[in-house]
Image (cartoon, rainbow, N blue to C red; front, top):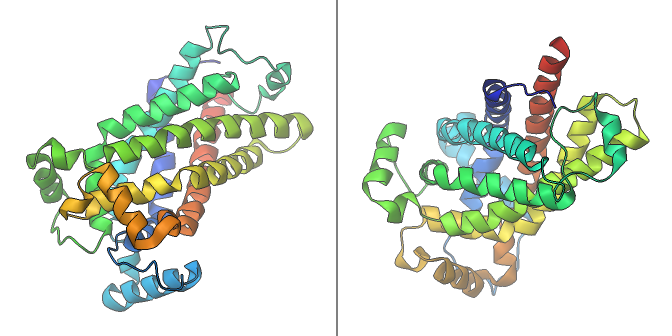
Length: 305
């Protein structure tokens, strides 16, 4: 791979993060609102996802108008733009370093046929799994205070007046607040990112081999959608736990075990999949946008050079 440079990777990642955040904020907002509850409903019939989503969206629009669906967009941009940029840049450079090891180097020679459709480093499946998980968890730890602010801005349980004020408030409260939900986030992000990169590269390689004349953006989008769907469903329970811990102030939501126990007591197994359809939709769309933009910009730079 010809190195496009750290600045170009950061630019590509930031652009993809910006596009995904602005376009898909309503899905993030609705997911947070659905997951934030503290009501014991395990004995009641479970409403369909569409019914719950519709009622939640209707209540938001009724109270704040259509703009209410984009509440927390600035906080999302503050978290996702640097987050996506750092993640994709660190992932790419970590993979480049790992390619020097024969233990992680890609073995399937068919992968070499898609050289004109990607400029990213190539690793074996275990290499992609380790690289994805490592990069994602590292960035998540670094930006966890911003994740807390983002979740609370999307929630209706806090009345923060300004983004700066909310961030200062969280940081002043110490590590117990600024790192709230970090274990659940790590348990969600490590398998999610690892699985995503493995599936993304596998689908991309096979699609390129079977249909070499297909436009690169189509292959990147298809690969990202497939990877996003699989990785999201495998890790969603940890997303529910993370959201509860970050937006609820009650003592029972202070720890990972106590939060998990509370969700189980309230809703049973189904409680760990609250908002799953919204997160699935958002992750598929954001993955398509993010990776198509990221790889597309790098390919454009590569071809111009």
